[in-house]
Length: 328
Image 1: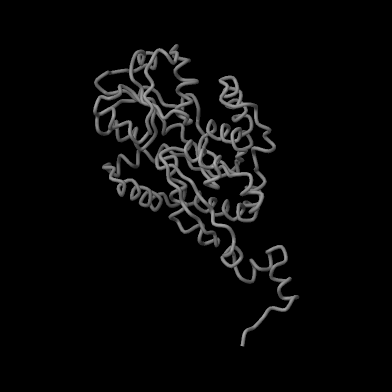
Image 2: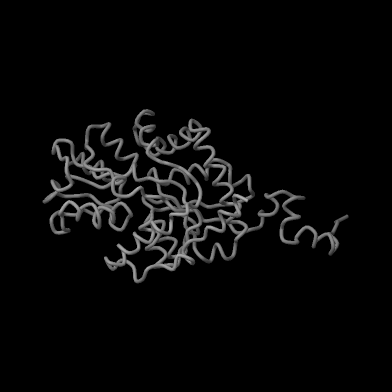
C-alpha cells in the first residue's frame, strides 16, 4: 500500500529545505535540482576544476553536473555569455569582459596562476628581453587573459607596438609544437606547456607574467544561475572548500588525478616535469577583500582599450555573499 505524506509532514520536510537536509541528507535535497553545466579549460589553470569534477566532492553534496572542456578560459567565458555553460573559471581580464558582454558574476577566487604563464622564445634564438621579440612571429591566444596581458601590458612596457611583431593566432596547446616546427619564434602560453617546452629544450622563458600580474582566477557564473539556484551555489562552494583542503593536505592524491588527465591526452612528461608545473598553481579558495581593487585596475585598462563599454558596477559583478554562506 502506497504511503503518502500528510500536509503537515510535507511542510516539515520542505520548509526552507533545512528540515529536508537534516532528515534526508543533502543528496535528497538536491536530487531534483538543475544539473550544473561546468566549463573548464584543459591547461593547468583548469585543473583544480577538473579535480573538483573527479574528486566526488560534488556528488557528496548531491550535486549533478555536466562538463564542458575547452583549451582556454576565454572560450568558457564566451560559452557562458551565450548561456551554453553555467559556471567556469578564468582570469580577471576575461571575467571583466564576460561581465560587460553577458552580465557574468564572480562567486569565488579559486587560485593564482601568474607563475604558470610565460612569454617564451625558441631556445636557439637566445632571447632574454621582451624588446628582442621585435620583428618576430609570436603565437598568441587572441582574446585570452594571457594574450591581453601580453598585448596591452608586457609588449608596450618593452616599447613594442602591435605592428612591431607578427601575432599568430593559435590555441595555447598548439604553441610548443609550432615552435618545435619553427612556425613561430616565440609564444605566450601557460603550464604545463611552458614546463614541457623547457624540459624538451624547445624554448626558454623570456619573462613570467607573474612579474606583471599575479593572475587570480575567478569562478564565474551566469546571473540567471545564481538567482534561480542560490542554495545550489552555496553547496557547490562548500564542495570547492573541501577540494581546497585536498590541494593543501593531500597533494599526492591531487597530483595523481591531474597527471592522469594530461597523460591520457597524449602528453609525454615525467612526473618531475609535471610537479614543477603544478607547483606554479596557488590554490586558495575564497573571496579576498582586495578583489574589487584588482579588478577595477583591469577594468580601467580594458575600458581605455575600448574592449569593454563601461566600468562594471562591482556590487552586481561580485557576489561574495555565497562564499560567506558556504563558510558559515
